[in-house]
Length: 71
Image 1 (cartoon, rainbow, N blue to C red):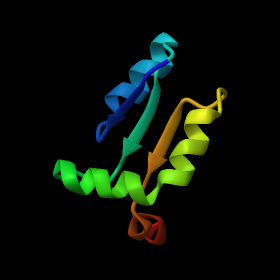
Image 2: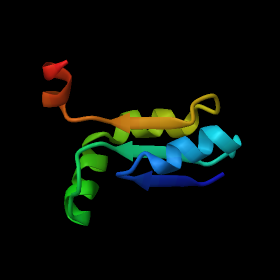
Image 3: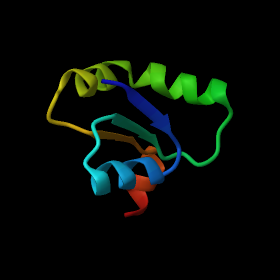
Image 4: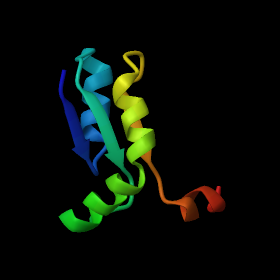
């Protein structure tokens, strides 16, 4: 099993469409430099580990809190 870390929805959509097995970590912060992405993943370490260990889940979305407040 492998995991794709992406900022784009394409991988998640393709995974669902073709029923393929990679796990997707979808970082929904817009276009960011690699160091900022690494920082986000570090802050979400426990949740990411739980996701990777759960065989039933396919996609883990990391969304900025200000987007949740706008909804």
